Length: 161
Image (tube, rainbow, N blue to C red; front, side, top):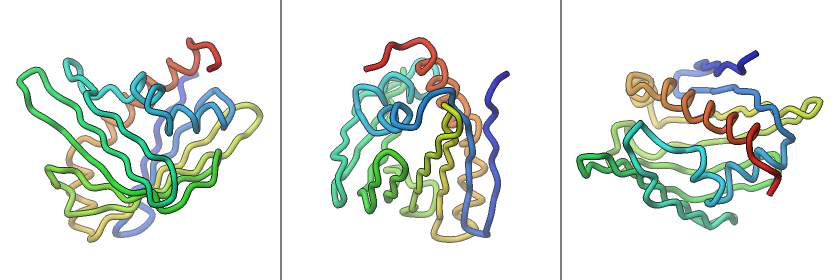
């Protein structure tokens, strides 16, 4: 049975994504926070390259991601870590260089282990309802769904690291 992505809008400014992974919580946390593992599943659209993946995983530390398309175009984002409780919670700011989502967002990742599988809940808080609605129109659900499918496949086929 495939683990489906469930997207909801719990408030006028939030998007919440829920997805299960068939792996223990510490392993899922590592795949979300270690650049060498993140590069294996957060691939971007077909034909794109995950060119930059920098993570300074500490409160006050930053991250930077850059994907490059086949025509030289770039999709880039970055932010700062506000809270880290390994292996269960990460809170960070995020802003895309292209900023089609109305400025900085606050992203909360919560991981809960249930019988050897992990429930991931990603909550994204936008500056306004219009920013949230704009993000919803970008195809983010499809993009995140594809990335999470990649993570699922990676978790199933890789040896523990």
